Amino acid sequence: MVISAEQFNALLAWLDADRDGAGVKYETIRSGLVRVFVSKGLNDAEDLADETINRVISRLADIQETYCGEPARYFHGVARNVMRETLRRREIPLEVTPVIGFVDPILSTERACLKLCLGVLPPEKRDLILDYYLYEGHDKIEYHKGMANARGITVGALRGRAHKVRIGLDQCLRQCIRRRENETAAKGH
Image (cartoon, rainbow, N blue to C red; front, side, top):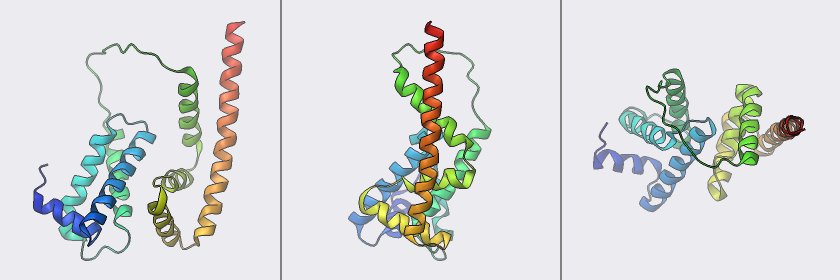
């Protein structure tokens, strides 16, 4: 899909009346989308983020008058659909190209354990914790306000819920890493 300059300018105007502010929001949203796709283990995260943005732009004329709320939330809803579609139609490689490189066993263990622990969380808790850490600085504060409003709770209650999920996730990670270290040590003897 080819996006015209007019369509892109309309998107920026929807994000913020101030052009510079709109540019910052656009970059924040795009980088957040990339992080979401990476966290789900999708290696074409930047392409998927661009696909998500293109879909929002194509629907912008229909939604901008009636959509209420932070535009970033709409992007993330579209991203979830893009993710579902992508996971449904995983490409099957016809030819396997060997990749030779150094894999840090500590980082790969942590990453595998994080993926495992995120996978056992109920979807609502997984989405909460992934969304909670999407942004940094002022954008994070504003996004947390939007998350709290969408759930009908205070920002403090949202913070408490995220903290509980994070504690459980941390315990799961420690157990998983310890178990893998023990398995590796047992193989070495």
